[in-house]
Length: 227
Ligand SMILES: *Cc1c(COP(=O)(O)O)cnc(C)c1O
Image 1: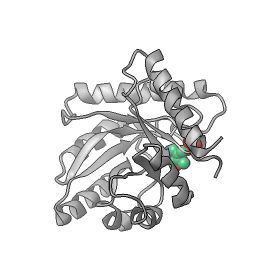
Image 2 (image 1 turned 45 degrees about the vertical axis):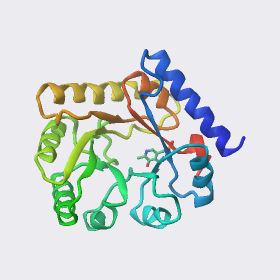
Image 3 (image 1 turned 90 degrees about the vertical axis):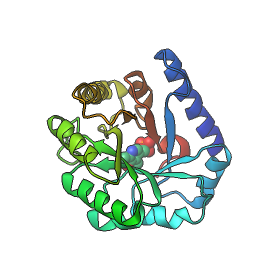
Image 4 (image 1 turned 135 degrees about the vertical axis):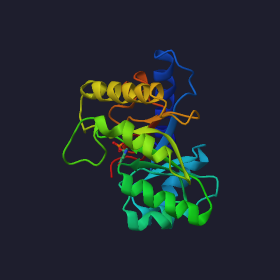
């Protein structure tokens, strides 16, 4: 199968999962996670119609940014160090992994210096894995509210990285928990009223994530093959 075939296959499965869940079939944005992959691979998926690509290293976004058309939306999905914020905030369409006040502060400060607004998601470590970044579930609403109060930032929703598993069902509860957290935040009026994206679901579990309310799935291996 070509990369384009892989991409079409994942697209179809995303749409089928939406239908199964009784959601419009364009309800979920498919982010092609292109980390470690060459520009030629990305170009192929771009030509197949994809505009959303995910990277987890600032350096890689910077290198690829100039080599691909300007309408690519680069999603920074990895852990972002505060000293790299300045380089990436005007290149990334959205920063998925904001997990501390300190990081939010730096993004806000650098965004104001550049006169831009940066879209972010609050990363929540729903599975409470010690090896993972992300704020604790019970601290999510506070961080969400705090980031919403800062200038130069648009908080667009929540993100989580579920554990790697071969059985997607094992991750269902984490997706339910993130969805519930978003509902709690909306009800507590910490919501900016514009959007509540849920970035959850990867190659192994994106269909389950869609059933539980994901609006953005991050699929790497399923499109580009193993890394
Ligand atoms: C690498 C990565 C993905 C994609 O993982 P696959 O299992 O290859 O689909 C998704 N999200 C994040 C945060 C990642 O780092």
